[in-house]
Amino acid sequence: MTPFRSMRLPEAFRITLSAPDDFEGWRDAARRMIRADVPPDRITWESPADQSADLFTQGDRRLPAPPADAPQPRTSRDFLQLAQSVILHSDSTRFSLLYRMLWRLQSRPRLMEDKADADVRTMEDLARNVRRDIHKMRAFVRFRVIESEAGDHYVAWFEPDHHILRANAGFFVRRFTTMHWSILTPRGTLHWDGEVLQEGPPATRADAPSGDPVEALWRKYYASTFNPARLKIGAMLKEMPRRYWKNMPETALIPELIAGAQAREAQMVKAGEQDFGQQPQSLAAVAGAILACRRCEIGCNGTRAVMGEGPQGAALMIVGEQPGDTEEAQGRPFVGPAGQLLRAHLQHAGIGMGQAYVTNAVKHFKFVPRGKHRLHQNPTAKEIDICRWWLDGERALVRPRLVLALGASAARSLLGKTVSVQKVRGEPQVLADGSELWITTHPSYLLRLEDQSRAEEEAKFANDLRKVSTRLSELSGRISTEG
Image: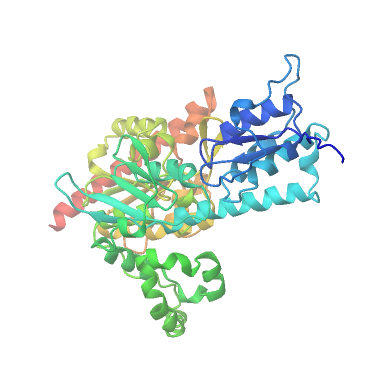
């Protein structure tokens, strides 16, 4: 009889991460295992959301210690950037995929450039799914208000496909900084009290309110932006799948709007203009609506909209291009370096800021990230034209006698076409509503100049403002005489 021989199984390891999106934990463990020369098929990766039982793997306490002289793992920036998105996916094999890629990168440093490689393609597919889920959350979260003695608290319910809740937290903090809100999901919750962001356990749909008075505003806003001439039902369903409709109050209007689209399109063609619905009836309504505006990509970039400010009956309206970094942070127009320069020149020209209503052609800050900084990026003509709806609403409510446009973007928002500032500056143009348009350079342009060039341009800028001041006095005298 052949004696029994024990069979020694190859040593394997189980690594349990602290959270489904624990990129830092995965990276530290992966570095250690690479330095210890542990191949991918010897590791089982888990997180609290996708644990599995494996009798032949050992817990984290038995992880091998790498040799003291083991080199640090080699990787690439492309891999690290993509990995931070991949790890948010709900696929339970994502950790193994990433470690396998890291293992292969040690012998093939340029592996990420091979777009035909199966692992590279899988990483890109998973990251694409995560980015789409992040976009859906930003676009389709709808807050409902709960009134209490402590004030209004806004609660939203969302069902993400992937582990994107914490990755999306910064967007909602920046967008709704002044609100007290909670976002409830089956994967966890976020709570913001205006100062501190807290995480909570998973929730159920029953924990969220089902309706509130704000829904009427959502429906009215959605109906006013529904453009039947651009209706493509297939594309709409691809971008806004039906699974999100149950949490969005405006979707109840879609069947009726689609049914009447053909008739409305015919009316628009006959009228020769687009139908954007009824203009807001107050500046407060404009302010509330631009917070929810996502008509263009700038409205979806995570910044909060900055409303104009000033007396509603101001004789002068000043229009800039867009809020900058400082304006977006404070939620007020023209409070940054360019705004301070403008205020100094206005005061020298005899124009008090209290006399003017100041606003921007584009209501959100468009920027390019550079490390910890956000660098200004010019809005496109299309983005300016889309946001013109809100500026027209402000003008209709303020009814200024004179409008001062600072720069080409502001001029386009008022004229509907691009003009050369240097050719038209300092001379009035009559707008359709009877007000006068004066165009000059934007003060941020002056800040970018140096020495003699800046001195010359500032002199031109000051001269333009003196003309505006003189014209305002004339218009004021005419009003007094007419009165």
